[in-house]
Length: 257
Image (cartoon, rainbow, N blue to C red; front, side):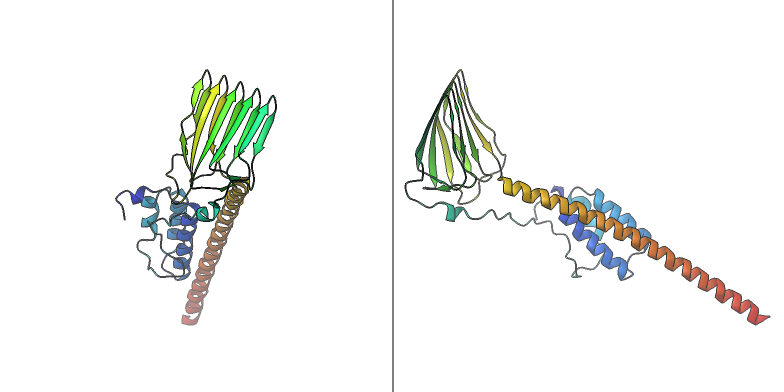
C-alpha cells in the first residue's frame, strides 16, 4: 500500500460495499439503529478511502460483503494487440477542397496517412479503428481549413506539426498511455488553418457510463428507501417492546393485589 493510498478518491461502488457491510452488521445486532444511520450518512459523505475505511474498521472481515480495499483494481482497456493488424491500411489519403472528408468507424490506419484540407475540413477518428502498425503517422496539411484528429484514451500522441498563422493544438488527456497501445505521430503544416488533436471515448462508452451513473443513482435511492424502512421497523419493534413491558408490569401489579 502506498503512503498516499488513503487520499485516493472513493467510488460509488466502494460506498455501496461499505453500506452492505453496515446492513449485515445491523441485521446481526453488531450495530444499533442510531449507529447504523450515523455510519451510513458518513459513508455517503466520504470522498476518499481515508474517510471511508474507518467506518467498518471495528466490524468483522470475511462477511458476505468484502471489506474496502485501498488497492484499486487496474482498468483493463485491453484489446490493443488485436487492433494492430498489419497490412497496408484501408485508406492512405484524403483531400478536401472547399468541402470535407471523414475517416471514422471500423477502418485500418496505414503506417502513413496524408490528408490535405484547403478552405475545407476533415475528421480523422481513430476510436474504433485498427492500426497497420504499432506506430502510425498522420501527415495533416491545412490551408485556410481545419483537420480534427480524435484518438481514444490510452493512445500515445506525439505532435510535430508546424503552424504558420495557424495552430497545431493537442489537448492532453493527463494519463499515461496503455501498455501495448499504438503510438500516433501527427505531423504536417497549418497555414491560416488548424490541426486539432483530442482524446475522446466512443459514443457507446459514453452511453455505458451514463447508464452506470443512472443505475448508481437508482441504487443509492433504493438504499435510502431500505434505510428508512429499517428505521421504521426498528421503531415499531421498540414500541411493541415497550407495550409488552407495560402490559407485563400491569399484570404483575394486578396479580400482586
